[in-house]
Image (cartoon, rainbow, N blue to C red; front, side, top):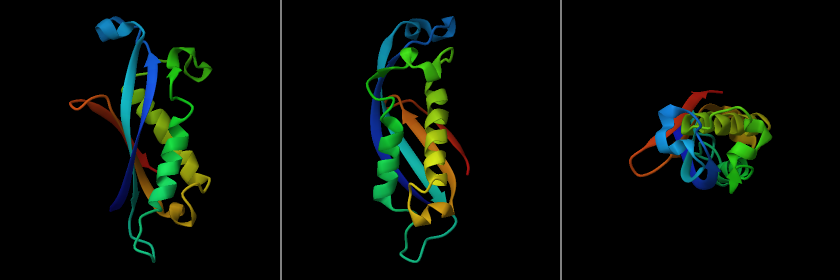
Length: 132
């Protein structure tokens, strides 16, 4: 498979209110470096997986509603534990919808897989990957 991966970041606040999370039970901030990889079986007639500019715009649009937000206060996340893994799936679903709706241009229909990684630090990350 071929892939194009783009990167952005998002700054959020949240709490993880369960004993397993230790000090992260309290409200704290996180800055995630977010990578989104778009996979195709082949290249298009221009030698591309997907337009890298459109992929970058799609990721930026997916992150915008979360940036500088307290996730605990967002109705969409009421009652949810907003772990890094959970957020990776949320962003995967948002990008998958963007692909289906044509946000990645005419070549977007060729995307077969998507992987969204959230890097918490230089030593830890989580991701969600799946077929489209």
